[in-house]
Length: 337
Ligand SMILES: Cc1cc2nc3c(=O)[nH]c(=O)nc-3n(C[C@H](O)[C@H](O)[C@H](O)COP(=O)(O)OP(=O)(O)OC[C@H]3O[C@@H](n4cnc5c(N)ncnc54)[C@H](O)[C@@H]3O)c2cc1C
Image 1 (tube, protein in one colour):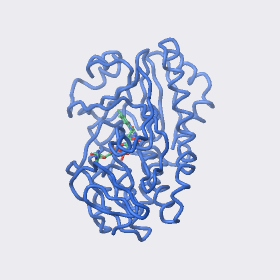
Image 2 (tube, helix red, strand yellow):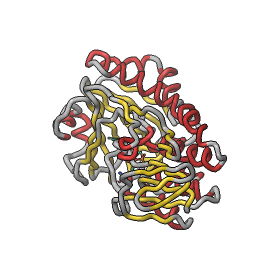
Image 3 (tube, protein in one colour):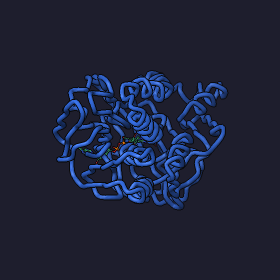
Image 4 (spheres, helix red, strand yellow):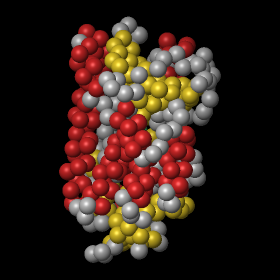
């Protein structure tokens, strides 16, 4: 019997497998998609996420990010990251680096989907593999979470995200968040000659219709799309609890608020590390508390921003307020993981 079976080979699952192996545990990852896996994502890894990648022995190539800038056509507010840079990196590049690191350490990555989960007092079996523990890292709409009955209703009017890349030389080394009354466009330089633009909104319409709400940004992109549009949502995912028997939920599967603060990858890596640490210490019961501690600041900040932006009048105030009280904006940027 192996120690850890991991459902999902995204950032959370691969990080969990690497941490498990570094802790002397045997790990197998089950992932249905072929590497390198792409996904709808703003692709800005916050400084804490870059440090978490380094701790895994993973240093993907991308564009260094120096901070966060908010714009709304009339106002602008920016704050640099305090101690260390973030990283703009294509998901495929990030996935390749994590995948290679896992394989180098001897992690077995098998194609397949985790479906039914069977637990006994000492083991858990899924996808035909029996392990001491199952780490569910199967993403925003986690099938494992649903099967275990751990989902909570998230309410109506969910937010969705769409992203596309453009062939254009990056004009900034900041992540730019362009605000409008009905959503945000999130610009991340990810490589030489390549910029990603993710739009986040409650309104469901085509990507180009969203982008039309940001004329200055649209002009800067020179109409040169480099990739197809990818989408994800609804973003808000509420979860009853994160441990059930021998199953621990990590990354987006453990619950998600929104992509607005661009911390999902960092949190995926942090929560994966916490889950493995609890398992290795023989204290999986501690994971719920560790998850809560690791994600608290993110949840508070993201909910506060969402509350402010949930009505058009409030959304119009976000950038002017951020530009008028730079210390508050800087403190919010420093609080990012
Ligand atoms: C529009 C948008 C913009 C974003 N922008 C940013 C950003 O700029 N910065 C940032 O840090 N985060 C951002 N995020 C969030 C970030 O993408 C996620 O938080 C991150 O990918 C979570 O990693 P994960 O491994 O938990 O999940 P995923 O990356 O979704 O990986 C889950 C994996 O599980 C696999 N899987 C699914 N079902 C099964 C199954 N039954 N069995 C086995 N495997 C399965 C999937 O194939 C997938 O590979 C954004 C998200 C969105 C939607």
